[in-house]
Length: 398
Length: 101
Ligand code: SF4
Ligand code: SF4
Image 1 (cartoon, each protein chain N blue to C red):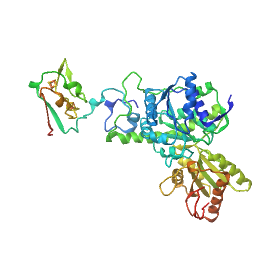
Image 2: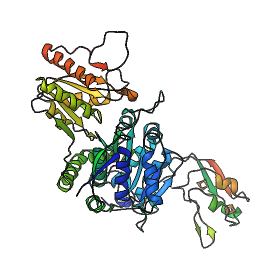
Image 3: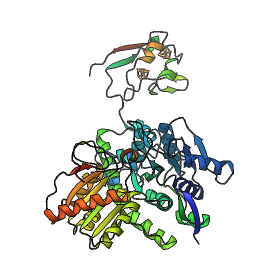
Image 4: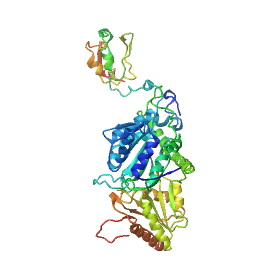
């Protein structure tokens, strides 16, 4: 039986961590993820977990601690945001190349600079090529559910990659919402034990992360690339079992009113709630609006996403981080690339929004849909790389 | 894949390498000629050597084998030519010269 509660997104993730009872938690605080180690420290003090709680002096060390612990044969977790993630950058790559299925709770916050503590996706988007799996959540419930699924996905034998469970800083991490929690025993049974084939503590000699010469390094990178492809199957398998066990359905993305959609948004995270309200309003006025909320960004479900967009006339990809490439954000780049092989490609624009906590309301989303309707009607795309909600002395595109 | 390092060569395809290059046995650097890039070489002058054994523990690459309380010839497959042993030897029993290959 699920337990009805009201929790913030950070509390929900800390709750999941307690239920999983990992071997090591490497803790270093940074807003807005700080509450996760804070709640967990209370569980440790209360004797509610057996976890070795290691308070380190930096995020580089927290990820290093996770690497050592996971290589030693236990589950290692940590939580971070923004500059904290940037500071563990080197070790993110080492975790992935060493094929250690570490779980990181990422509470998305703008990556400095300018220094800013509010939500956008620039921290984890910067780590998109690090070899980590990335799952995103619309609300606390999804953050909790994703966390319960994380380890089984990451530890799958032909995957063995670290995983980030991301949620929007403050918007979901600090907002208290209704949530369905699962019973401790049911969670433990679902997540299961961690039984790696080889560990540093196995009794016979083992080395992890050795220097890799020219003759071998590219082969090991290919192994990683293959593991990332394999993760698609693992995600679907674990999601299906999660649905069977707890009744909540997950896939690569949520397609919201997409069946007959003529205009659609592709976005990540909490803005989906705002966008759904907008879609409902537009549908009442007869507009065939749809929405794709991406849950899995790594691996990128290119084929499935393209198929879901193949019948749409005009698409706006909503990037909650700047691409700094002169032509769009990361989600746009990948969505456009995914759609390239379609026989009939939808018209596509990139809308960069919500950067550094800039608010995004139903009315803002509606302006995007209205713009898409104009594009669908005239066939004229116009400016493809648009910043929404910014003060400008020029004529606004939206 | 749980293949041992000794069974992995530069011909092994990626599918048969261990995940992330994990190594499942100890002392595998013995399998690799790590002294290849040395530019200077040490030469043991046996008749000056007093077998005081100061040099051996200083060697960062374990390239001065000691057996039955006595040092033996340098392991030049693994000596990196750093010259530490040359500096340490009190009896000029180690020469340190440009290596001519
Ligand atoms: S030169 Fe350096 S590596 Fe070589 S034997 Fe002497 S101490 Fe060892
Ligand atoms: S330090 Fe010199 S004298 Fe002493 S054992 Fe080594 S080579 Fe011989």
